[in-house]
Amino acid sequence: MPDVVVEDASVTYHGVEADVLALEHVGLSLPAGEAIALIGPSGCGKSTLLLAMAGLLAPSSGRVTVGGEQLLGPRLRTALILQDFGLLPWKTVLANAELGLVIRKQPAKESRHRTMEALERVGLAEFIHACPGELSGGMRQRLALARALALDADLLLMDEPLSALDALTREDLQDLLLELWRDRGHTSMLVTHSIEEAVYLGRKVVVMTPRPGRVAAVVDNPLMGSAGYRQTEVFYERCAELRALLAAEGALHPDAAAAAAAGGAA
Ligand SMILES: Nc1ncnc2c1ncn2[C@@H]1O[C@H](COP(=O)(O)OP(=O)(O)OP(=O)(O)O)[C@@H](O)[C@H]1O
Ligand SMILES: [Mg+2]
Image (tube, rainbow, N blue to C red; front, side):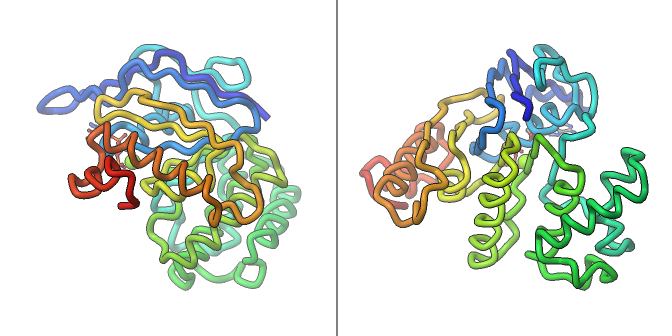
């Protein structure tokens, strides 16, 4: 599995009206096989950072290395899951899951085999002929994951993949993400707006400042993945710690920030 290093990266978008400095001197290191969660205020540059790590956007200055090599474009084994899942509505579940391999021009027979295995793994083998419109939100998310698995991704980048789901489906899929990470050991980066999700799925949680995004803090969370973690005192303490950090960055509603400052759960 590759490590990822973001070295002093800045990104400026050149708009019609004005330029927007989205990221400013971001330095970040993902050790090989590590699971990182990234949290920060809306508009702080989380998606921008993910695109840079996927090789889809070149930093205006600084650089990104994956496995020690400077990233100059997309990699074969990097999978990026976007908030809207990136599914093609007119293609079947099977075709959608196979898409990453087809785009990367992988051999057809092996691709089909790997895609079927991946669909099996996420519990969608019975639905291969359905189209995304016939699936529930949770199933669509599973399909997006299957595409990443079929690619045998060694670097999985996810941009708020679970935010559109109801609470129960969301917990179910958080457990699936955890299980897949444990089984496969890929390097993983999850962008989320949820403090609890960041603590449940990140062995390190990176907190960003408001735009222009910089790394405000990295919180170690070594017990992530341990049995029943969600119900432990340490889990609660980590959430409170993150809430306080986000409040300090002005990322919370004033009422929630006041509660965090008072040590309560907002
Ligand atoms: N293609 C673009 N052109 C111009 N400006 C952009 C573009 N994409 C993003 N931006 C600007 O860059 C900043 C960072 O955007 P980005 O989407 O990375 O934030 P984010 O942290 O992912 O936000 P959210 O939490 O709302 O998804 C924002 O101010 C946004 O308006
Ligand atoms: Mg975003």
